Length: 115
Length: 114
Image (cartoon, rainbow over all chains, first blue to last red; front, side, top):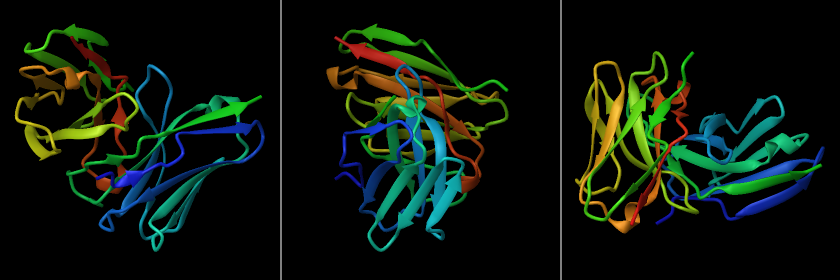
């Protein structure tokens, strides 16, 4: 049972335009959500996160939106740059504190930003 | 600041053998987690170590075991290797602060079981 789903395996966007990556989850106990970016031959790199008490979090060109009623979150990248080309993983946790910090990941979306 | 380092980067083993993967956590991080990423999948949680004890485990059999040392480095041991164990094994470190401390991943060890 896949609790975090990224239904688009790939996305192609022109440089300068907006990239929107989507993620759905099924477990209502999840209360913390993260996006990671992964380049080939490297480990995932933390990008941005959002707590379930918020519906939006912004960091520079990256904004994450959370719709709890729909169990849906999205990552917006504006403007998109060729260096953003990578696999993006959505992840969720149901532990908002303490030392137990298990992440459940989606399968990832390959973003390609064309010059 | 030293990031998370893993060794070796690549490894080829035969079915039935045993393997040990190593991880040095990022400076100041005392919690280490291990994830398995199969081809075309997202990382899957194996277990986490905090203060040298296992502190949370995913849906992996007992032949997957680990250790954390006083300097917070860690080992992942897999016994009786199976073909399906072929994957990228990722180590991640963090402070035990929940939302305020996202996981920092190493570049992984690519294990191939033949």
